Image (cartoon, rainbow, N blue to C red; front, side, top):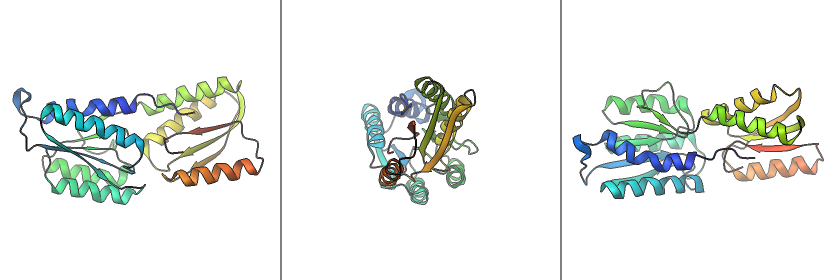
Length: 225
């Protein structure tokens, strides 16, 4: 079960409002302006869809746009990509922090250089970013938890796949756990950190099912698993 219906639509819509926010008075833009989206695991379909929205908005505004970041799940690599983006002195940066603790000082440093930064999909709430645009992840998890409990008639063993330490996924899990608290027979058997790697998710699931462990539901908190 994956409950995250709006994120890609939001991401596609963000750039136009971002450009208007960071552009000159009256919404005028210069062809030399450049807006960079920084993300982790950039090769996955989710981010490829998001960057299509970025490029579309950039084309409408007649400015430049670019996706930067690590090809695989690599929080340190995302930080380095963000630093490279800042060094280019772009007109603005969109970033989805995989590790908010790593990215917060980097975001603050960009803001100190008058480079606008907006977080999308996953937030760094303690940073000085202008604002966050994305899913209400706690309530998404709450909604998913209620649906799962209903489908299982309030009783079942559940396994979650997630990426440890990523704020949006932590909030989703919290929402599920809150929903399950109303059903004493809903049990979280295991929370598996698939570390942004679909192979880990596959191997973990295969091993789990081959062991004949009684699992009533597998819930994936992110796209790759």
